[in-house]
Image 1 (cartoon, one colour):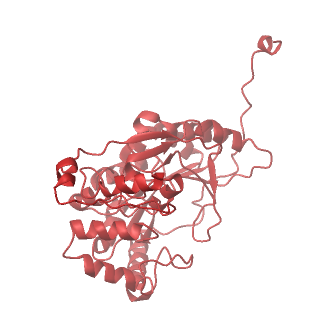
Image 2: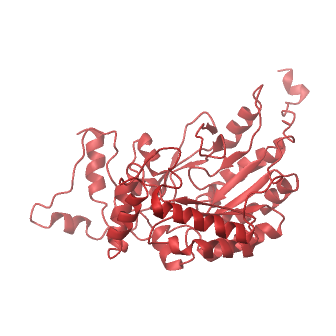
Length: 373
């Protein structure tokens, strides 16, 4: 049986809500030619064998990538380079736009994405090597553009901290995007970098409702802990921003202004928002989640989503994929602009990070005696 079929059979047996996990299914890998569905032969074999599956554990897989920096030229993204120490994310956010990328690893964008994580043990050394390349021109590196750099496994592996240590030594600017209070562990590094205008931290706050957060992003920090992280980062002199994202029609969109107000009170000086994006497998995963957790609202939510995407579930056009089109999307954008202006969260001149401090430190040399050998 081809590997894809084996994965399909296993995926079909993972359906349903799992404690501490966001996705409710494990769709087949879209590149596989074959997929299987679980089938009950009438003797209750599936129920007897798989009816009481334990919580899914997290599995770590070494990533053998030989580069650290990922480059992009997308016109609607405010950075051209990023470093991601992890592929997959234990936070389990059902809406995560990075989920489809797991298919390139031969894994499902569903439960595999949040339980089978790839980590890059040599990411700091690879980054240092790339920053030393002749002709390298510094611009802010985004840390956490794809998956969260402070997801739970970071407590043990400390790959994000290793990356920050390299960037501090090189005088290289960095922007961090996270929904984890774990960023506070690195206050020492970030504080020193902020003094040199080399660091900014953006906390993603999707909702202020702890109950909604628990099913929407089950292993991320609670909303209150994220706001507390904003406050402590600000007190440490680190520039902070809030990202109200994603805004999901009829689920959390009514919270937009309140999220910005609480973030501004905690010290954030800039803000952004993104309308829900449902590319590839995320559309099915999100609909499954809706019907499982918010069945009475499912049709309304999906109808509003289509109204913002020209009648489709998603449109990948760069001009509108972050904000959508149509009356609902225009109203949301207007609400954001008014609230951001009122709260002083608009982008201002002179707030950028400083790229002029970039200076690769001398490479470590072997003692002269060892060089004789």
